[in-house]
Every structure is written in C-alpha cells, then in structure tokens.
Length: 258
Image (cartoon, rainbow, N blue to C red; front, side, top):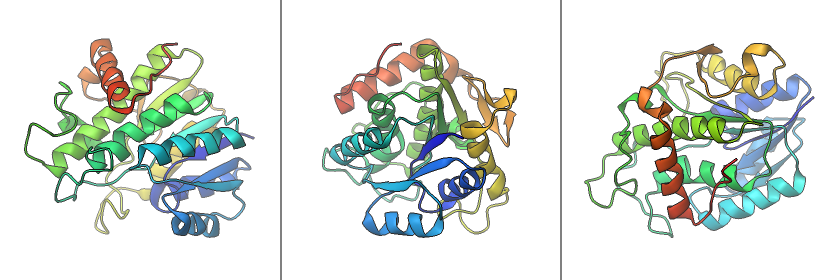
C-alpha cells in the first residue's frame, strides 16, 4: 500500500486516478483549489485519506499547500495533475504579475516538487501538445510577445516533460516520469474528445502505485502505459537546466541538485 498525493483531484483525470488508487487499497490525499472544490473531491472520492486546499495560481498558497502535505506525509508518490487549459483569452496575471497559466501549469509543480518532502515517485501530466511547445524557453512570462493561449498551454506541457526528465537526471533516488493522457473528455478537453479518458487515469495510477517493473522506471514519457516518443529537445541537459533555473528565478525557490 502506498501513500499518494494528487493535485487537481476534485474532477477529471485526477479524480479518476484517485478513485482507482483508493480501490486498489492505497491511501490518497486529494487537493482542491478552494474549500468548495475540496468538499467535492472528498464527496466524489470516498475512502480518501483527506484533502488539502490551495490555489496554485498563488505562490503563497502553493507554498502553504506544500507545508500542509508535508505535515501529513511522507508520501510515496506525488502526481502533478492540476492544470488549466488554453482557452484563456488573455495573459490573466496573478498577484505576482505572472500569467496564471504559467503559474498553475509550470511554476506550481516546480514549487511543489522543490518543497514537498521527496517521494519515491513523481508523475507529471504532460500532453501531446508539448510537441508544439518552444524548447528555447524564451520569454516564459509572455512579457515580450503577444499572448497566445494555445502556445502558452503547449509550452507549459513541454515544461512538465522537461521537469520530469530533469528530476530523473538529478534525483537518482526518485522514479520521475511524464505522461500524455491523450485528448480526453474533461472540462479542458471538451465533450467531443476522442481518446479514452479512463486509460489516461489508469496510467497515472499505474505509475504512482504499481509494483510492475514497467512502472518502476525513470526518465520516461508514457502514453497508455507504453513508453512513447517525445520532443527530443526535452532530453537535453542544457534545456533542463535552463528551465530549472528560470523556475527558480521566478519563484525564488531553488531545487535541490541531487
């Protein structure tokens, strides 16, 4: 039995993964953006260990969220599932002046990775759209270029893959992987999405809790429990180090080197 924390687990893929893991006998800590979403998570994932609340658009709330998780930990696995989509019509700055999409999809997973007591497994939710992301990592804050929600989302999903691979290279005691759930029917993907929603959730749960040798790997990118090809630039150590350095600069929090 493992103890697993899942961000963004009040609905969609995160909630489905939580239910699967609870059914398999694991202890699952849920997360909601606010008290109302946290209540929904507890209602819809009966048998959960509990829930923590925090808005990942806020650096202060994300930091407090990490403290709350550590107070309940340690955890064997952390699934970085939470994200917002690409339909944001504008840059939508946070209190820190950063695009909300960047704060939630990129900087919050980085912060939580850096601040939560190191688990044995880390799982990062990427997307096939990462292949359209910009591996140069120029202007992460969109302060020098006109806002484009789709491009910003694609960038953020590339960031998730790069971060997963950077952790795998740096932290040899952690199994760190990313996954592509496919285009699935969530609030983000829309009702007409063609891929299998459950298979995306099953891959998250499998990487977090399975004892199978195929799940106990690191530095891989998965699609429906199979190792999948990804944008080659994400595997470059210079790209990984640049993203980590930019995240550290923007958050003021340094990631442990090993």
